[in-house]
Length: 94
Length: 305
Image (cartoon, rainbow over all chains, first blue to last red; front, side):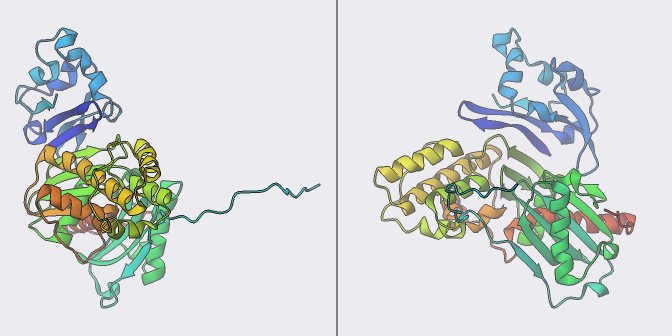
């Protein structure tokens, strides 16, 4: 399942997509949990009883601001979360 | 000492936004002969539903406005079904809660997200050809892809903005002083289809609608402009995950042809028809999940509330 967390507003689209099929048996040892400097990821049991990763509720409506520090303007050349997720389950829309 | 105020008060305003609450039971069936009776309770931000499924088939439902607290809304939704059918919690083998108030349903055995429940409900209502679901809820909007079994494969939700939600339509209904059920048909009674209102925000769309009325637009034309804006808004959400054949709309806005027809036109796809109330999709899905769980785990003892 592709889970898209985020929103669209007047300034653009801000979604983080998580491919939970790649998440169930994570080959990276859930590196996203510690890879994100803001600790935005957490594990949960989904509706089909699989343990996967999701974006914490309190970050879902402010991604444009919360992720800004990890974008090129913040000094990063690659996103820490997508880099940590070696199976390639995490993607940003912007 | 009591004092009677003689100060003038505002006249009570008719509530144009108030949609029809609905309670239904299948008179051709008798729940007493069913082996598994399961209940789904969907406590949404605007409406609450209770659906009863007997042996995997829809038996009864009650759809009403959500009150000021989730547990009471859940209880009232179930009470409506009880009064209609005579069914009590002691007769129910499992209850699943869904919707934003799902964790506050006092008599539920399990909570499942409305995303999974809407997909499951749409699969029942529209058949196993349903692939893309648009749920236009009271205060959020969801685009969902599912497989032939109704399992979610992709979803997207927008609960940050009220544009493209039922609440937005209620605001316009009140502003125009036209009953909400008439908005859709009246949006087609225009000489020429107007451009959509440019504001996506409900608050600013309301201001823009007032400005259009002052500029000489008829009420029908303003409604058409708002329906078009709502359609464009949700279509942009749908396009993010892609639209596949087997398109189904759930939620209260599915009853508004002014929005549905415009969405169909923008997408170039016709939404699938159903005879079942589109508003109960979430609760129906929850009841079907409960039915599956009863097959796997057996009946559960009722939870007192």
